[in-house]
Image 1: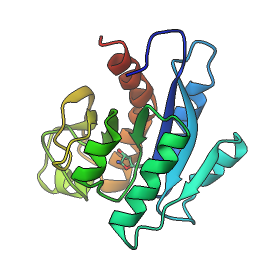
Image 2: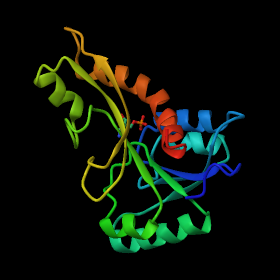
Image 3: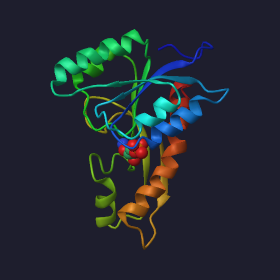
Length: 193
Ligand code: GRF
């Protein structure tokens, strides 16, 4: 992949909702010494709150209507290629990309997941973590492959769960670490650290 040759890596961020991770990725991409540039924000949901962060920063947005996955993904591949995207970062994107899409894109796709993978893949992680009375949770940035939340782990950060933790407080704690973790993980990935 195109990297470390002085050019910033053209990146697309995929979101479905709130977009707080997108917000912090945009912030870190704007730093002088940043190594990636967000050229495109993709959403499957035209009402996603996070789209506002792209608009404020004049980043192009594109809504993908996922009614027909096959057709949507074909259009998406064309979009990504037109914008010379070399890296996709999924940040709260609620659709599962097909194996075909992952193969055809040929470039890396990263995801951030709010648990200590390989534990608690899938949805409702915080509830399951609390119900199971875990002592720790955290967040993981990993490479996307065709199995859900199962690709190679790039970076992970752990937090301690307090006695009085509930889903909301845990979500808040984890989001706070995610907002630093994602760009750190991208750097680690690009520089093979
Ligand atoms: C994050 O917790 C992320 O780990 C998960 O979805 C959440 C997205 O939050 N994949 P936001 O939309 O970035 O605020």
